[in-house]
Image (cartoon, rainbow, N blue to C red; front, side, top):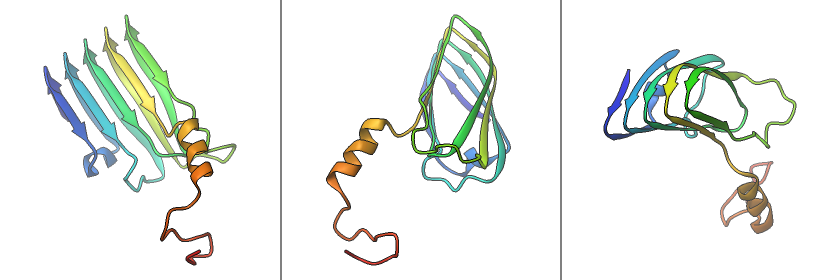
Length: 134
């Protein structure tokens, strides 16, 4: 269980890999950062209990999100996954629980960052697809 009551909390470690993560946020901010974790196949559930709070969830490409929240005067926004395409997801993040007077944002790499990466090309020392230096 992650608790943020009238405080700010950021979680980006192995705690996020539990099958069911309970998060209680009251008048606070919580950031769940899955980007640098090796996510397992299957369903990961995040049970949110939020009152007058904000929650940002950062996801890597290829994670499908199921939103099953009871919302009261709240906003839930999911940024599209532009890199994923039509492949079948191996990890599903299911959001359940109740959010009241709160905001939940699911963030991924934006189209802008993908475009910028394609424009600047590889960095010095980056390996190509065959594992060779340029």
